[in-house]
Length: 197
Length: 197
DNA sequence: CGATTCTTTGAAAACAGTCAATCTGTGTGG
DNA sequence: CCACACAGATTGACTGTTTTCAAAGAATCG
Image (cartoon, rainbow over all chains, first blue to last red; front, side):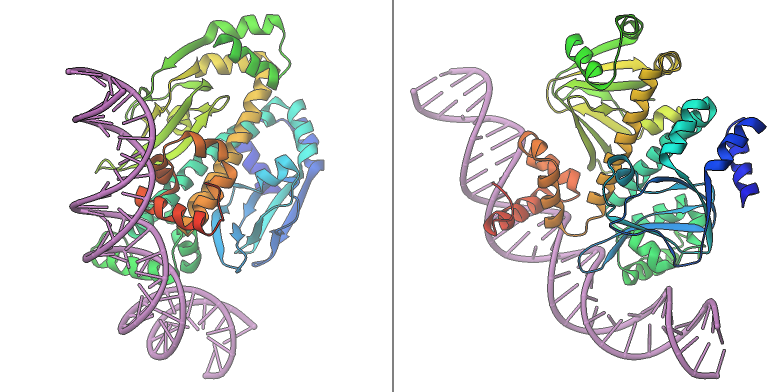
């Protein structure tokens, strides 16, 4: 895991052995079995988290226990609750693993401190913020798409890798529809050959 | 306008007269009358833009010309198209003024150059990215809310300042429903005293 | 293979959308 | 100052899509 983590950094920024020596001590590797939680509603999120292996889901539950999945994060993606982190307030979100996963955590104060010392790390953080923002706009676009079949089409074009990997009922929740609707939409699109099986 | 702009900076970061002398030359003030465009679909967005006065709307149009409003930005908010900016691709968005507005533009290369020279400016940019991310998560939350009345309730709680300021049919588009639906929802909520008139 | 979990299908109900007409308020020009 | 035009908001009747509820089929895993 540590090796994969190192590999991720190397692929993003030039990093010296010395710098690596500074980063390593603040890293907290965490293994999550399928179904285990990274963050529970009501807790305060205080980390920077990078997914090394597996798949992590973020969702929000309403009073009746119905959930809306906000995103899926796989290898090399960043996860966490920005809002809880920035404002030190209890999270309204739940984050869990939908596959056996490994995640690298860093306490945010320590990470920020390092960012001030290592311009490259700061650069990485900045790029990452921009990427997250970009993805989040894509998410808004998806969520504001009106019809169910456009949503599914758009998802299957933009996230073919997730289509294979994530149970359909979770995709339905992500797209804001019931599993029954998704099943019907899919059937129709396959019949019209507008989407791959 | 320049004074208000200066005031915005002062309220966010400590900034010396010298630093200000470096920032000012790259600033491009732009006045927009109600209905005028800041960005049209198909253009590439190359700026950092801060709204000084007025209200700026970002929307996306589909083939049939129906529009989905993605956000409203008022005084001291940042606007633009991150995706177009980062990837130098034509924008799918349109940005226009729904009130007479003033906006301060800075070319992104010049702004980035200054950020490298002025740590405080970099800090401001970073904070701003985090704020944008946070707001964008809030937007996702709204967009993924299922029922029309919950959407309106949540909007009227979180953005009372916009409720007063923005025509109802635009709020409807922002909330992903028709003006007729919004009118009915509102009527119901006012009757049940769940929302202020 | 049994049990659980996930997906599919059907029928009825609920909800938001569409279309069309009316109402309301604001600003403009006579 | 009034009348008119116009943009926006409301209301009603109808249509269409998605949800809900229920049950039956697949698929996966110990």
